[in-house]
Length: 159
Image (cartoon, rainbow, N blue to C red; front, top):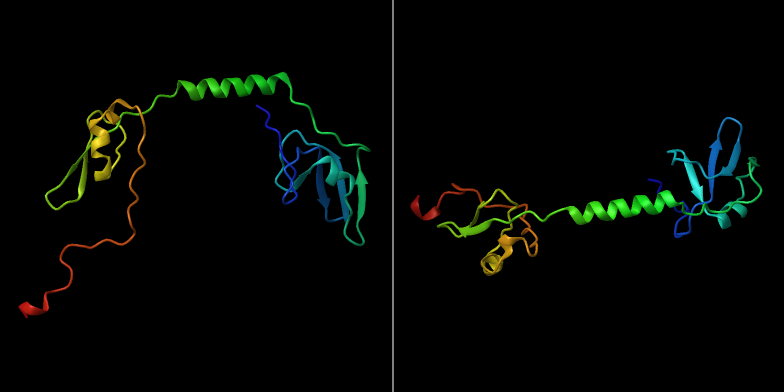
């Protein structure tokens, strides 16, 4: 699947029409038609930026094409997009798990069918109303990076 690439210039969202590469050994900027694949040391430019390109002082610009026009989308692109949409629609939601509270108030998931686990007591009612049937997904509760460990500091009153 060929994905249309955008211009590498900051703030420009136009479709790329040319590829810019630098040849440091010769102090040359090479501007040519859009490469078939994105290269790590090449920059994709839209037609406007390709036509107004200037090189650093002391460098030469070599233009391999006189006009740069963005490539039109082909039938292959449309077919590839349709295939991606079909695949995405075939994916099923994973069944959820029940959430119970332990004796100390922490939440412990008990998987009912090996599905994904959604924690948080505010979702208990939602699980009972049919979340386990996969009708809607509930985000997992974020766990903080600081936790209280058992057997912490000794109690000063007991000493």
